[in-house]
Image 1 (tube, one colour):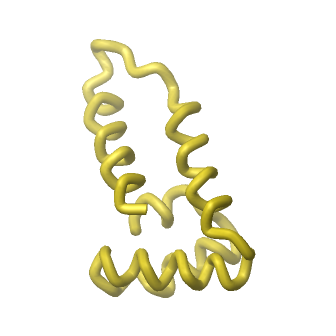
Image 2: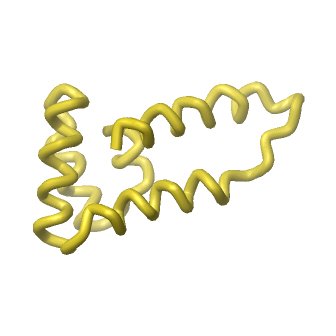
Length: 80
């Protein structure tokens, strides 16, 4: 859910935040269903997360924070 919250803005972000109090599994399922109802296609939402990860900045060997953050994003995307 934090991944969705971080990478959405405007109205979609309000929807994500509205379900953020739920546990991750239930909240993610409900949030994606609502986004699909409103915006038409959950595949578009998932595709945007994939593109975000593919366009992630190059993580250099001396960038410990970047090395720690990227796996968390991958794990969150796996839940989609």
